[in-house]
Image 1 (cartoon, rainbow, N blue to C red):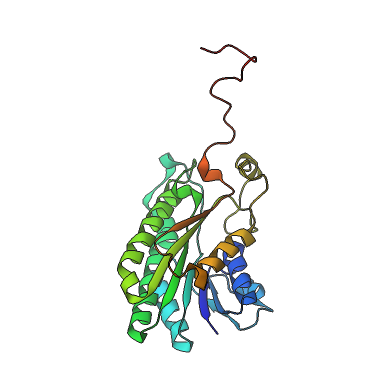
Image 2: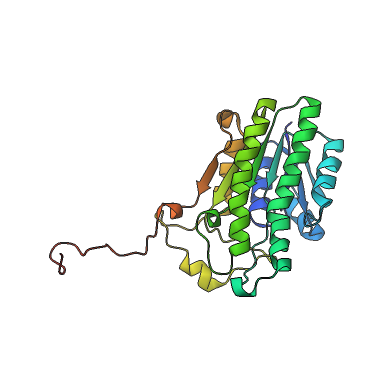
Length: 256
């Protein structure tokens, strides 16, 4: 049975990924800083285990990976934990910046490095999936720290794929558009959700859409895919659907 570590598994996208992999027959270790919520999220998932971990610390990611690996070697790592608070740029200080970078960028790097080191030492192949965001391409007010972290995470994905490929390790990313999830850690204002709801594919995104993309990238069907970012966003990265035509259609107004 293949074994995956999924961070941020107590809620949101991480929980959806853990549930999907469990249905697909994986043994899943879910990690999160919220112990009771994590236990509730994994309850009923066969071959699952909860691991409480604080990924905001320097030691937390490496300690987590090493503890999980000692119990059972891993075949996959899904870096789904993340925070996305809003802070206007003129009010952003070093502490606010560092808090986001610690979880959204440093933790995936440290986890990936520890996972790769253990896999290389054991002579095992493996896959890392980083959960990026549409913010890596298109920021929003109040998200300079978050957008910068996700843009850097995509570069990290390519860099790690380049160096780890010769060892039989793949590193890929999934970049969701706006997906409404229930989370007390990352609440979203209804006004924001409404403003970003217009995408070329006319339905809201769901956590299961992202989980399905992760499942594909972990599958044998994706065995020759590495260093890429799969955008699961309903087409939002293609452009702005809310803009009018540059010139009105024939017969509806003046044209040059």
